[in-house]
Every structure is written in structure tokens, then in C-alpha cells.
Image (cartoon, rainbow, N blue to C red):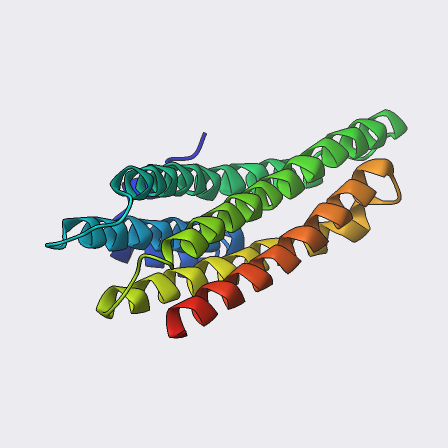
Length: 208
């Protein structure tokens, strides 16, 4: 298995993204961005809870912070998993296809790898939307300068969701007609709509 992206410092990560290595691409970058966005949410909640005279529901605030950390950790794992999934698909593409038996084996392997390369960005988008739900609830507690950070986190999460789902879109045609494809399309549409609605709700609440 390839080394985790999280072993790189920021400069090295940028070099990986800018290299000709296609396995560190939009989904991994989006997952990293979304994970950092949720870390921003944790920071915002810590500042809110540390304010003198805080009179809100501290238990709920801490619960939201724990949930944000959990989703951030999950997104961090997806950043690595997407690179591995796409590398696996590329290996299948390069399998020999000189004989009928080799072509059948290659086709089976590619179909399995393509599903994995679709499932990972879909799961990452699902997690980013869960992060937006956290933002929506935290928005009622955010005032002053930290409201800007929370709004920025929501925008990053929404943008990351859209970018992840672009990868799903790219795989849909290759998946062919099937019940699995229909399920993917339905969830993709729901996630895309949820991300847009929650981003709008967070920003409206913060500006209101």
C-alpha cells in the first residue's frame, strides 16, 4: 500500500498534487480540504465554549466538536483510500488482454475496481455532507469573528462535496445499466442537493 498522504508536509503534498501521479487527484485533495474544514469547526466550537459568560448548552457543544473530529478523521482516511482505489483501477486497466481468458479476467477485475473507485468518493461526499449538518447546528452558536470561519468551513465542505461527486459522475457511464448504478445516481443526487441546501442554510443563519 502506498504511503499515507498525511506523512507529507504541506510543501510535499503540493508537490504530489502537481506531479504526474494521477492517483493523488481531485477526490484526495477535496477530502483533505474537507477534513481541514471540519478542524476549523472544532476550533470555532472551542472558542465559543471558552468565552467568558458562555451560557449555551455546553454538553451539546462538546458533542458537536466530537462529531466534527470524527468526521474529519474519516475524511482523512478517504483521502488515502481514494488514491489506493484509483491505483488499483489503473493496475486492472494494464492487465494483459491477449487471450479471451485474459480479457474476461481483466473485465471482471476492472468492474470490481471501478466500483471501489466509485464507492470511496461517494462515501467521502456523504461524510462531507454530515460535516455540513454539524455546521448548520453550530451556526446557531457562532457570533462575531468566528462566524466567518464557520461560514468558510461550510463553503469548503460544500465545494468538496461537489468535487467528489464529479468523480462519481465520471464513473457512472462506465458502470453500465444496473441496480447498483441506479442506487449510485439516486444517492449522488441526494448528496448534491443536501450540500447545496445546508450551505445556503448555514450562510443565511450566520448573516441573519
